[in-house]
Length: 158
Image (cartoon, rainbow, N blue to C red):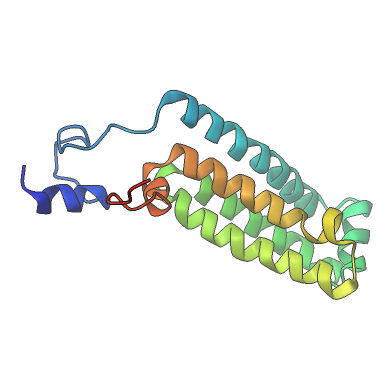
């Protein structure tokens, strides 16, 4: 196999009818990393699904929290629908990296909202960062495309 074909397959460009193993690439990460990644992603997704449900249903505690952050209650439904769309994008394996990027932007806005009102740093302000770390960490463990982005260079001597 020529090096150009291997280089292209490493970046997600595959020949029709062949697998990564056919092109000289490993089939994927070991099973334990995939399952660990699923658990990490699942923890974040459970929280995000609960949060989306609270925004769509708009119970009094969700309305109070939104108002405390400085937003009118009328934004709850739109935010909840946005979160459900982002969940769908992240749950589809092919679009999961795009979903992680979009979630990172959304959660960055949540950090800014907490900073603006002076919430405690470790419990409130950085909580969205913890959720994003679970999303990205889980995706890194279970998706070879994301793992390849953060892999050390192949010629690195350690």
